Image (cartoon, rainbow, N blue to C red; front, top):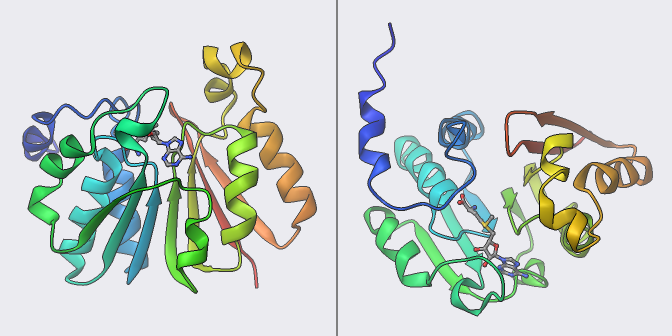
Amino acid sequence: MINFSYRKDWLNPPWYSSYEKNNYGDFFYALMRVYQPKKVVELGTKAGYSAFHMARGLTANGKGKLDCYDLWENYKFNSVPRSLAEKNLKKYKKIVSLSLRNAIGVDKRYKEIDILHVDLSNEGGILEKIIPYWIDKVRQVIILEGGSKEHDKLPWIKKFKKIPVEKWLADFIRKHPNIEHVTIEPFPSVTILRKNE
Ligand SMILES: C[S@@+](CC[C@H](N)C(=O)[O-])C[C@H]1O[C@@H](n2cnc3c(N)ncnc32)[C@H](O)[C@@H]1O
């Protein structure tokens, strides 16, 4: 039987993350181990759950940096103060940077990166303002939160008449036939996008 006691260390910080329920931390860790990226960018960090697990993977690799962007206390909906992310990611401060700024336009700061993770309370409108600007700058994969039908049933997507991620994704793939994608379904779901050169 597998012993999961090593996970006890991760339960202490309050993460406020929908990724926790189905242990997506293991997915983010594995992604870093498989791809061995040098530069990872995360748009939407909140208390740092996904960043923590990516940093754990980069540390095990012995190389790689993670740049995180979030509006934290300046976000008008649901987030946490940047100080909480700093506290939760303290162990990895040599390889993780935290920048408080709007994720829209962050692409201009980079020529090329290896992996991008986008988790901005994802819906079609925000993804359209982000993904097209990164698609030619990401060498390995883009990971975005969402893509399943269950994700698009989140009450705020309907209430605020947002474009479901699944619909945005279908339109995006139609416009970019050279992009492969796969969605991992357990809630909240993640979609992996990769350019097929
Ligand atoms: C779902 S949370 C991120 C969760 C995190 N990745 C985790 O593993 O728990 C979404 C975050 O996106 C941030 N956010 C939303 N829109 C943003 C924008 N335009 N620019 C920067 N951050 C934004 C919010 O402040 C919030 O912290």
